[in-house]
Length: 343
Image (cartoon, rainbow, N blue to C red; front, side, top):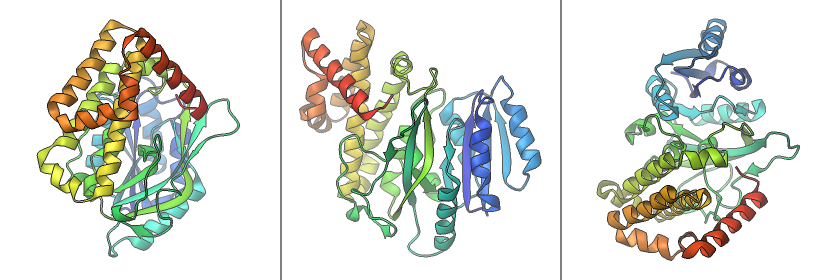
């Protein structure tokens, strides 16, 4: 069994995938790199096969019909043989020295008690054309360099969340929780992080800048105009998160860990805010109806959750009546977006 499986979902990634793969190859033979060619029409498949021939003990290539990012992650997870599992997007890369530190720790904890469920590290917003890059770190919220549980977690600030770039999960935990991401849908990385959380007991935070998250391509899914054009998919993911959070079978598991419940609520709140503000930024009647329908969906699903979201500062801001209220909300969002340097 390998120590760490890394899935690289690739769709027409020929222009940039080599940097990603090369950065992961520094981890050596304790790793399994799963290059998932999601029905690409460029040279992605050829490049992936060449890497597999050159590194047969480390790299496996999975060729499949196009199903989207979630489908590629599902294929990687199904094929993984590593004790731990990580997703690295094909336009991103990892820091070699941080990778060595993470592998060293995973070796030391493998087979010991308590069993590690999730390792968290920092990631860097590697925005094209900028010399200084924002680092997302968790020193104020998480204990450093020791095993901890949800009861040790401190409050997360608004806008400060554990994203897919931050986490390495135990492979068995992802299978135990039944993680299966929807196909042909963008923004499923939110589900990837969100759904396993009630199953996580033991965590470890390593304060190293491991993952470099590239931002800058015009066709990138986090580009604001692209996100607005895919608002239906953002809202689909939002609703699936609501379904998961309010599911009766999981409710007792979530309720048994108050800090986990609090974190999941805050995460759901920010995703609902993003869905709402994108609709407001669109200024189209169709997207405004989508926003209205989303809030009505939450109300029907769980009135207590709806009331709490609606009375929160974000809920109030997203539902200021009239065109003037909408302009104030969008203006505030654009100021925050510029200040925090996202999208």
